[in-house]
Image 1 (cartoon, rainbow, N blue to C red):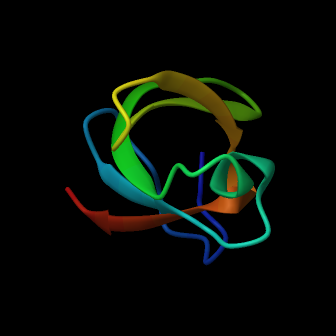
Image 2 (cartoon, rainbow, N blue to C red):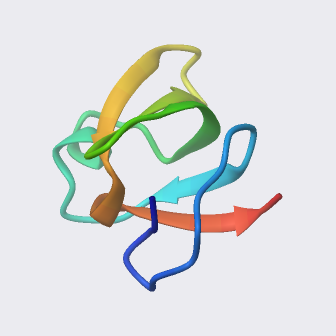
Length: 63
C-alpha cells in the first residue's frame, strides 16, 4: 500500500491526512497506522479515534 506520492505505508508509520480528505474535514490531522488493507488504512488519529482512510489521502511522515 502506498500514499499519494508512492511511498510505501506500513503498520506503525506516522501519517498526515491530506487537506481535502473527508477525514481531514472532520478535524483529524495525523495519526499512527494500525492496519493496512487493500484499499483502506486504519489510522489512530490525533483525536484518539481509529478511522478508516483511503491510502491516497495520506502522506507518510516517518517510520
